[in-house]
Amino acid sequence: MNVLIIDPDDARAALVAEGIRMDEALQGARIHHWPRFELAQWLDINPDMVIIACESPDRDTLDALQVANEQAPRPVAMFVDRSDSNTTAQALEAGVAAYIVDGYAPNRIASILTVAAQRFNLMQTLRNDLSKAKADLAARKTIDRAKGILMTSRGINEDEAYKLMRKHAMDSGRPIAAVAADILSIADLLKTGGV
Image (tube, rainbow, N blue to C red; front, side):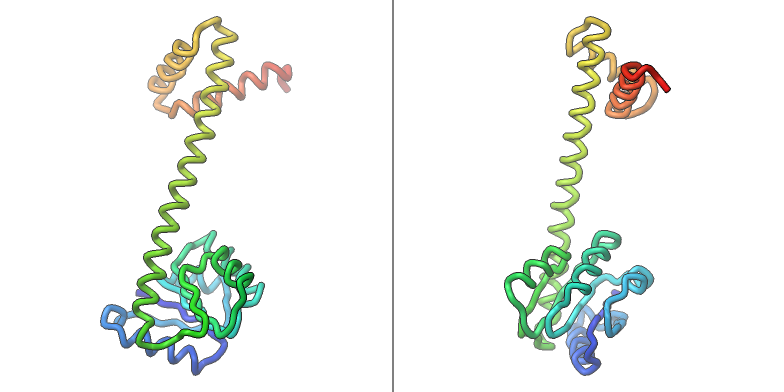
């Protein structure tokens, strides 16, 4: 396991590392410590878990964390000395899975990291499901529009238009949504009179 600790305070970072080493499941973990967040290094070491400890997260750190989580999402646990509801909300939006205010204790690190990893996995599953649902809806809309074009141009009913697209998709080895997108492109080209 590759664990990244981001903390400007070397003494506090050492305590976090000690907490990681106290857990049997994490004893073989490779621990990296950086005093500040840097996206290039995040991508370079590709951590399995990220721990950020600070007095209070600043806007730059939260923005960088959000970008990192969009490019290479990882479970993030954040330990802060003080916080307010706005900062907490921003941290969660940036992808923090466990946000602990004034509650760091070395003997609790393993359970906190476990919760962070489980919450991260749950959120990733929900994001993937949402992305798939959006893609399915967009494909459905494209197919429906293409069916409408075929119905109008060929004078056929909806079922016949769908069967025609499905047959073409199977014959060409392409998804039906791709065939439907082609029909829409051609219809747009014909409507505008070409180039």
